[in-house]
Image 1: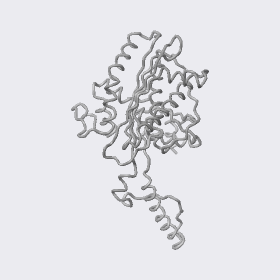
Image 2: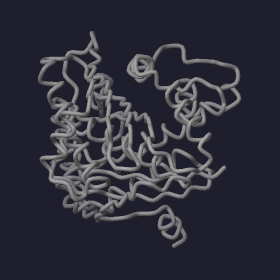
Image 3: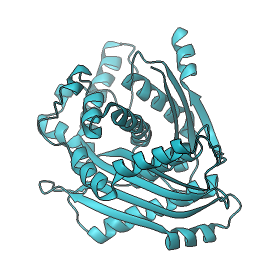
Image 4: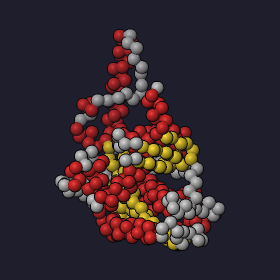
Length: 353
């Protein structure tokens, strides 16, 4: 089995780190799917937004949302539940257990987000119907094309109390390094933050260091190939945000990021000659954005949602473009404007040296 993967990552103001982010992302997917021939091509896209989350979460969420899209296709071919195959694949369980229909004992937060979203958008039926319509056309150019895509992503951040804890531990470690270097004359290099053993962090601290914001999105479009325009666009987003301090503010932030992401995607792929204001007006008039917030009753803090919505929309749009721009259709001229490019072939060459 061969796997071909294409992805794009918004890097915002940190475009100076393009190659570093891309290299890490390629390694992520290579490690996630060992012993499988991979063709990986990645782009980073400049945006006017400053990422609010950690750089590594942008790359990991983008690439894993692409992996989950491939898993969704495999689940339909195997007649297996998407969530079941998703959980078993990413958790590393042997594939033989998939056929035994052994679901996880407890419903994960991803399942809590995704199940209602799949149900109220009728994702499985629509995807199967659109596939059948395309197959019946036998490669003929379709005047109206409908496409639907699914994306899952997560964003992590470090709690403020844990930043202080990690800084204190690093300071203690650096003091020890300084003592060893100057007191005993050892050739040890001093760094501001050195690596820490897991035993240096207590159980209560380690559990709160990494808080995940998880989300899922489904994008459905209706495209007119004769006029080269979208007739309609519907985006459904569900995000697990922990404790909701202000629901209207959280929804407003997600809606704003979603609109900015749609604007970036449409202006770079379809409406390259259109005025930005006209695209804004079209999104507001013809686009539908539905937002659902999943609240954790046990949480005592609000999770970060900085780049989560942006990444979800970007991944969904890439999958839609792949459906509309398939080898038989070749309708949409997808022209990415990369600031950098990285391929898995380069990693193989580096490993040889």
